[in-house]
Image (tube, rainbow, N blue to C red):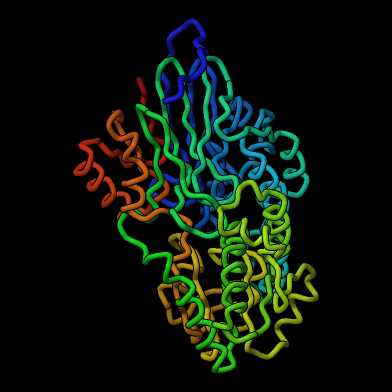
Length: 479
């Protein structure tokens, strides 16, 4: 265990921890730490769910934004970073500490998120005008934040290399460890006045494509741990190529289109790499493949910029002079016109498009145009939070709402959870094993109630540690 540098402020202050996001739910990661008379945030993510509830929760902080001294960001996924522009809009002006790769990803993702907020509000208001003309007057839609808010956020990012000790406030330092979740992702270990608090961020899985495996943490007194898949086990990652090949081959044989809602960070690049390998091995038909997301295109450029984050297999591509994220049948689409042209293209083809939970972006248009055709397939490749369109599709509702219109779900729906970048129950238990002997308490977040409840019982049985399931707004004194 590496010792933290001495950072005693001279006075003894307990650490107060309050859970404001990813409590009782999976999205909106945000944990409030007060120590030495200063306030800090671990993550500042977008809550995703019912539209009006999401807007209200994301736009209204339960503390003065200007009171936050600094944000320590685990990784770039929107449910962890996506509400930073709102924080800035409301008065935050402190540093946002995170890894260099996460900074580059956030620059792309927050810009894209702001445009989506603006475009969705614009689209919503056009529909509102139509409804108003027929006697229905709904509330005007406004964006959660704007491109200008995102641009004010960028200068606040400050790079922190992995394993570097970073002093962030009176008596508070932290170190980062590779979380193995997405490019640049970290787990954090904070120390203030002799109290060590570990924050898992999102824990990845050993063996997922492109990035390195999760790193073990040093000893801690308390642990905040995600529990997304705390009640289940994933199918082995080794099966994913075969399962993906089956879906592509089966859909192509009936002339269908494969619509893949995928997170622009991580999942899209993993799918591209797997499809590259499958096509090289002639295990799938040579159909056109499109990545239709300006964000995913920009993010893929970030991946190319940070080969220091790659695992051995991804580096092999580079060493043999190949581009892991480019091959003959693959087309990256940036413009709206090229995206719309896919509506008139006959299958078979495959399109990967954001967002991963089908809540915004171009994937909504692809789903709207293709979900009622039984020749097509919707391939779900990641976790779908409650009340999202992605969850409704995954649960195979007879009808699903897209842009406020009910559409029949007649396309085949396939879930490929082998690609999940979240550790399952067994992997979470193994990840915490090295620090379990010294833990006083674990706090389970970023999971639905059933998943958290099951994981809490397993932790208590395996390690004899109290596993708390904090409610939104619940506070704890750590000492």
